[in-house]
Amino acid sequence: MLKAAIILLLLATLVSLFSGLFFLVRDEGKTSRVVNALTVRVTLTALTVALIAWGFYSGQLVSHVTW
Image (cartoon, rainbow, N blue to C red; front, side, top):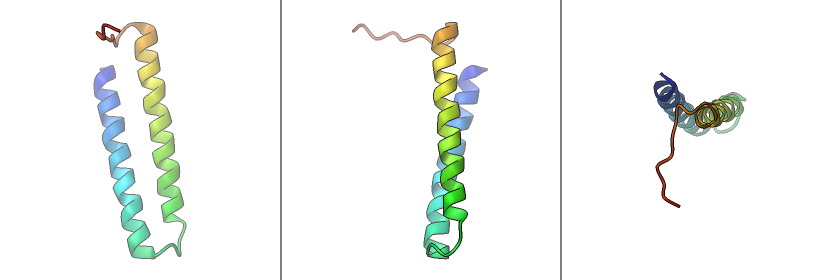
């Protein structure tokens, strides 16, 4: 369940990234939609990092790296 939530948040971050690019090209910086897309993207990224940290803390995510 946690992995699915992380994947969904990453996909939502990508959608926000491309919507910000679309608004930047279309509006030419005249509206605040680019700033809103950036705010959404930063929030989604913070949630993703928090979920990953929670997953490692709770033991639901495990790293198999030997170093």
